[in-house]
Length: 297
Image (tube, rainbow, N blue to C red):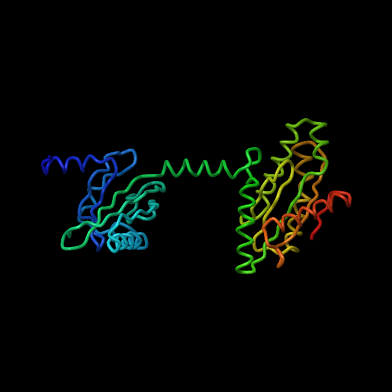
């Protein structure tokens, strides 16, 4: 149906690059990759070894995936990232990280005396970026940019599993703004929103990278502190309690405080929500005791 020249032309016109790679990691041939918006010209790779082109750790990863495809004999699919730091030679690699889907199939014949595969590399960076943005939207509170209730509960489930397996302690702080309704009534909802945004900013600035901060709803915030015992969490909570009135006074022109409750995972906890309920009970204990305080349970 097609001449050999036509078949080569068809392969060379493929939008995604297809690499013929031997078991030892040599680039025997490169076809396609004509979509220059997403790919560099790979023709210079022919005849070279992956171990000449890539840093050893990355080259070994490719070699391992080739071996898996050869051993299985079926289509092997992987996702991987390439950046300039993965490539030997300054300026030879991409200027930013690029994500690929690799579809690897063992060939039924040898190439240059070796078993070989065809590796089709599809640039999926744009797709991954869209998925990342959608995931962020599904996990993030629109007003404050903090995590939302859904992400919070996932985090608590994860931390409970770690606690059950390793007995590594996690503490939880629940707090809200005292007299938040009065703020909205006196200054309007825009001022209430501004107060919540300021509290979120304060938490991001002063809490640790390992801490997970979420807006639970309304003016209620939750901080999950992995690797932290209740006493240490109480100190962190008191730091926030001292700083919140200052930033509200300076940036919202309103006098207010926070009340909160702190708890940690314990032996009887069967569900991740158990520690959250205890911390919430501590919050209401603080409210009943006159507000502007943190209670540990």
